[in-house]
Length: 79
Image 1 (cartoon, rainbow, N blue to C red):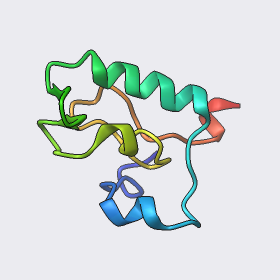
Image 2: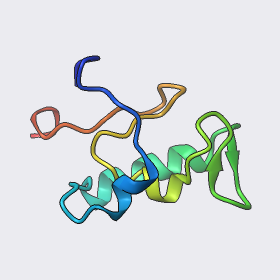
Image 3: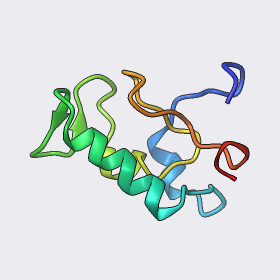
């Protein structure tokens, strides 16, 4: 995904039924990375860097890690 298309995930994105989600295996991989990260707050499932709830953010197609541990998902890259 180019920098032009890169944007932060917003809380209301999760409420929009038209927003695409990543495949389950991508979600699981992202969330495992988060759970092992030094910035992950286990009690609230939040990231100390972006303060997002990572159990939710990991499902969003355009979401990305602020520490570059995982990137936005594009179908072209994963064919």
